[in-house]
Image (cartoon, rainbow, N blue to C red; front, side, top):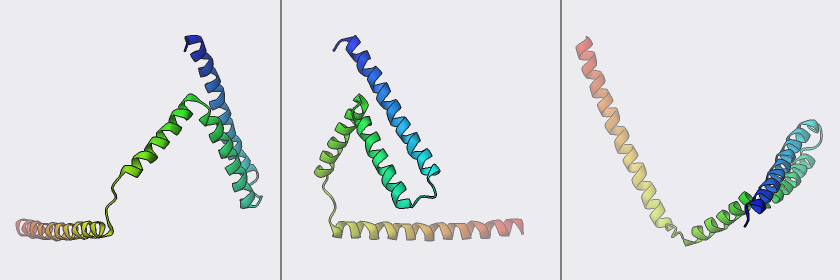
Length: 122
């Protein structure tokens, strides 16, 4: 790609991002302006504006790379080996037991140090 073509794409990308920002501003201001309208209509309008803004944003170079990132993340999530219910339960019980033991140790240490300080201070 030539530098002139890259600059042309960058200029259009900037214009597209300005459109996205304008749509977000219109959504926020419109939601405030029509605050007396039923919430259902405002939510539907905001969803439509968000969809249009997302569509315009995905047409930019950064938007396309973000979409590729999301697709790759979904592929990686499918590769994860999730723990079984039994493994999750056992790990949770171990964590709870360690927390309880540490709480008792810290409580005992705090009580001992408090008792020693009260002996020294009088």
